[in-house]
Image (tube, rainbow, N blue to C red; front, side, top):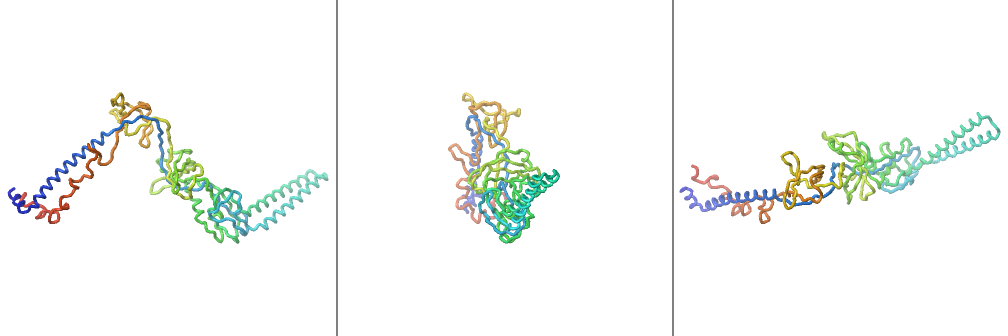
Length: 419
């Protein structure tokens, strides 16, 4: 000790350093004592609430993309040369509107020829009937007339097919025709909904991507693609643990990228065949969007909340109000006549921090609900110490360093101590 005192007299800074270390230890003790008090205070903070009725929902989350409910891939079913293309990509069209035509001269001639044949066969039937021809002859005449009439109907259908028309009110998503193109008529037009059991939802997006007109149409692209804009579907996926919870008709709440309001819908189909990504199986789910919300666009990302169970007008309490007794049952702390008593309850569904109560309390009863606090908590006067710092901000006087770079002289030891 005499050696230490000599050192202190020789180096006055050493006395300050020793004093600081002592104060720091005292600060740590005081700080953690307060922190312990904060935690105890947080654990016992409660509030009294009234039991009321509410709604319990259980749901699963899914992600997907938005697509038109109707896609129409239109192709000429007759051969010829394109003589007119009346629409462009992005143009709105109405049901029955002409979109494009091919040369119809030869088709019109076929109709004229078929009409002449029908007229001749009809005249022969009339003549033979007037001249009391045999039943066999009259039957043959009628058979020929029927065949001619069928041929006329076919010729008229072919002539009508020389004009491509829109089957719906919608928007032209792609045009793959120009005037002068030759079409073979080997492709047929098709109409389908975008939602599918496979859940790919890629039809409209693929068609829209090929919007520029080309010199000739290809077998993979429709000559003209028309999509609906007033009805939509969501092609989504759910994981294997959730798919069995869902069924057709479940309600859906949708958050759609670009839409300013929440969109709603119903589950229309649930796929049976899964796809795997990184070893995780997922199943396709198609959701029909309710109504005709504005601000929706093909290919927009969608986050869906699919409600598979909902109970309305049932008793609910905060889940944190429930306690478990030694027998494994559950109870709440009920306030009766100014006193707190343990009341055994039976519970039902739980969701969103709320739990259904099936017996034990009724609407209007008062219960004690613990309040969970996160963070530093509060002390007796309102605010506790924050961050676990030493008094004075967690630093030693003079910038937080000892002389000579933060170490004691002689390598961090006090001379004469311990040897």
